[in-house]
Image (cartoon, rainbow, N blue to C red; front, side):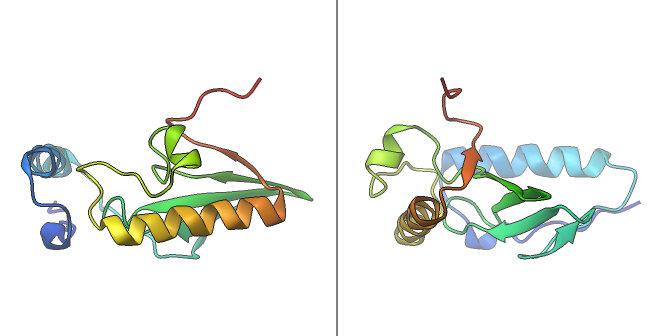
Length: 128
């Protein structure tokens, strides 16, 4: 079964991105079932809400997890290092749209400061 390929043309164009695109294409070909790409604000299973987080990579989403009165936000790669929390204006060569990712980081920080929502991310240290 052919799996539809994401549109990579709007992402970063460098050696790192070229490797990641090649890697993705290789493994998408191995999938035997259809891939469903979710849209911003889609809700999965009644408790996982996709939240657009543009700028780092094409189609990046955070995931808002809710259970009763408790909320948790998975921030994906919005902050790839804890230094970016203190310096959201910094970035790296794999940010596909640097100005947009800075705006996204600032917006996420503002939201978290106002809401006091709990968060976790792949690249952040475990809270103590």
